Structures are given as structure tokens and as C-alpha cells.
Length: 81
Ligand SMILES: [Zn+2]
Image (cartoon, rainbow, N blue to C red):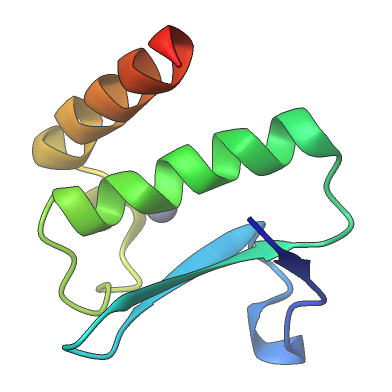
């Protein structure tokens, strides 16, 4: 995991994911300490599992039931790690 300085247009977020159709790229704000960075990584990773399609910019649609189930799975896997 490498944390970066987020571009101005994304600074309201702690992280975000981009789908290039070949790979997902997850970006995490470098000002976050380790634990919040891991939480953000788990959240963004869950978007890829839940079928991320570029994001709708709608908090409720982007963080629905499928995303919630994916967060749970990723978090459980992380805690076992
Ligand atoms: Zn999210």
C-alpha cells in the first residue's frame, strides 16, 4: 500500500478507486495514519468487490447492501491476516 497526496478534486475523500477496465487502482490520502488508511483501503477494496462501475457520486447508491457485505468480507479477511 502506498499513500499519496490526493489531487485537489478528490481532497474531500480519504481515498478513492478508479477502474481502468484492466485493473482497479486504489488511492489513499497520505495524511492518514496507518489505521485510518487501512480502514479506507478496506472500504475502497469493497467497492471493487461490490461491482464498482465508476461510482455514482451518490453516497447511498455507492454504499448499498452489496458494498456493506463486501466490507464485512474484506474486514474479516484482514482480521484473520
Ligand atoms: Zn466508498
